[in-house]
Image (cartoon, rainbow, N blue to C red; front, side, top):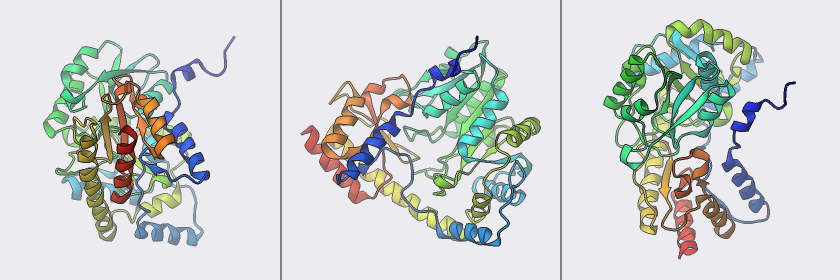
Amino acid sequence: MPTFPASRLADIAPFHVMELLTRAKALEAEGRDVIHLEVGEPDFPTPEPIIAAAQAHIASGRVFYTPALGLPELRRAIAAFYATRYGLALPSERIVVTAGASGALLLALACLTEPGSEWLVSDPGYPCNRHFIRAFEGVPVGIPVGPEDNFQPHATGLAAHWSARTAGVLLASPANPTGTMLSSDELAGLAAFVRERQGQLIVDEIYHGLTYGRSAETALRYGDDIFVVQSFSKFFNMTGWRLGWLVVPERFLRDIEKLAQNLFISPSTPAQHAALAAFAPATLAILETRRQEFQRRRDFLVPALVDLGFGVAAKPAGAFYVYADCRRFTDNSDRLARELLEATGVAVTPGRDFGQHAPQHHLRLAYTTRVERLREAIERIRQFIG
């Protein structure tokens, strides 16, 4: 007799930060002032040129399905962006527009994952990655990474966990929750390592554009056999539009198209027409100003946390997160996050969402609010740990 729900659901954990967010919202409803450092969402509104493009399309009334792989003109615009940003000639046919980066990851893993096959993922890392793998009856295998690795996987760690069941590797640069990046040499070496073992590499690049001090290199430079996941959510400030893209090795395109047709029909049509304005010079100028503001926030928050006694072993080079070591104050970061919220109204994310490697010693703080609010948050934390 079958059992319901499916047994795989036992391995899919809730997103614990959302429960903390629910409590934060309840406190706000009671009149408390809450400083939100828990959610990985830019606080800036969608740039006006993108909104105007969406409004113009909706006003036409022609809001119909698009091809399953996305508007051809948007796919061409993304390819042109790769040429301008990375100097990379990428055929637009390999670009698949998706329902957010989550849709891109679902398509890639649905295409590549056999029941029981293993995928190597960073620990700590974005929690949905391991849950997506499990949803397709795969097995996520966490690779512990820490300060000594810049919180990024290296070939020695992958080799130690590679088995006959390993299908491939899923990594991110810049990474969530740490904001760390792989160098060009490291990306090239990891791509070669996976290729030599006849595995598949998927690289999450959704925080490209939000880097500080150096630009991020796309993994596409190191092989046409790599899947790359991208998004309009983070750098382009379009989280609620639910739009991303997947760069697909040519031999998988027909399979990805079949999956997209069946799973999604097509991405949001208004969102796709809006995104046509994302690469306009006026939009990119707005986004660069916002990137500089994120850097200003990072440059305030990191030393302020260190001054309080938190450890920041790897200064974030991208994204908008600080992964702070809190063991000076607690051996239970989940309890600390909850007590901090109740006592001070500062909401942060405990490490438990991101894996099994020392989660009790870490908090993730998102610098997705203005410096004045970050300064207030630091003062409240100072008084709390006093």
